[in-house]
Amino acid sequence: MTNSDLLPSLLFKINQNQLALEAAIMELTLWVERRGSGDVAENVRGALQAISRNEEFINMTLSVLMTPE
Image 1: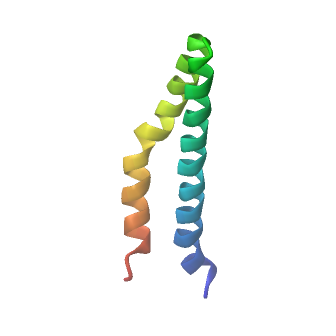
Image 2: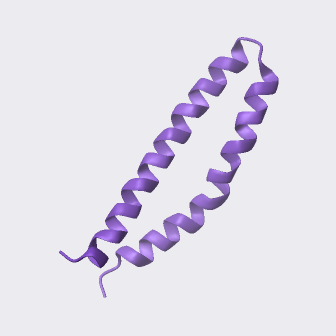
């Protein structure tokens, strides 16, 4: 397997890790919010929006990269 063949798989795994971290951070955000730190929770949600904004493009690009030629 060449390096160029590995790149789509690597990017896919990195994206999976990113989404898992997003979910874990959101769980912590909800926990913080329930304990009265709404400002902190709102700041974290704002930062997580970057992941959400980029998710569609990342998935589309991975799909193209992983399509056999």
